[in-house]
View 1: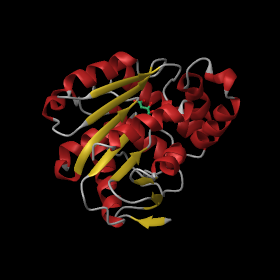
View 2: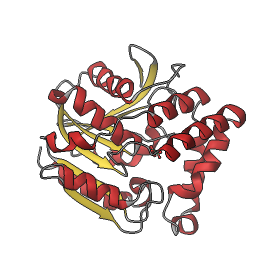
View 3: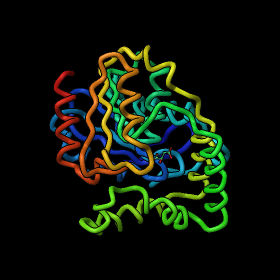
Amino acid sequence: MRIKLPRYTTAGDDLGSRQPLLFIHGFPLSRALWEQQVNDLSDSARALAFDLRGFGQAEAVPGPATLDDYSDDCLAFLDAVRAEQPAVLCGLSMGGYIALAFYRRHPARVAGLILAASRAGADSPEGRAGRDRLAQTARAHGAAAVAEAMLPRLFAPATYTTNPALIESTRAMLAGASVDGIVSALAALRDRPDATPALAGIAVPTLVIHGAEDQLIPPAEAEKTAAGIPGAALRIMPGAGHLPNLEQPAIFNAAVRDFMLSF
Ligand code: MLT
């Protein structure tokens, strides 16, 4: 379905009833990342997903973005589909950064958090410089070049040989991003604040879930995040890399379904 948000028009999915569960995709992906979760988990929740500005089927908003912008877009989407009760936010990687920003800005609208393949800390100086280099690549050579730069580290090493179809569908998802969307998001990633000090104040049930073979964000980051959030559960998934919901959907979905039982 097409949805008009205050700053741009996007596309979203809304399946099932009961507790709203909003899936927030990572960089530079789209809501297609969550197709299997939205379909499988709509028996346990009202499964919601939408394309962040400049990704998938969403219009881009030119200029640099911030995590606060994306989190406000998430709130606008929830309002647009009338999911007014507090939602569980499930964010992967950049989606997890956005979920933490959302909790800081709109805590009354959050019932729980699922932080997948994510981390709380800010970028290092080298990491920030890498964002600028990737933005130059995007401007000079387009989204396909960004896809080629990122693909070799997105999955667990074995996934490249066991599931070539997944590599191809992910390549298409990455290459489908707009250059404006990529460049805006890289500014948000580069300049994001350190969310670590706020972890101790998180007062909703939280699940931290991470691939044991994540080559982009080491599992130690998930351990730190879970240790910082009172009562958080930690699930490390063997054989999964940075996209555990795509690499091991049955295990990922079972963990989310179990978590949703508490709502
Ligand atoms: C993502 O998957 O959203 C990005 O890898 C996050 C990041 O680069 O920090």
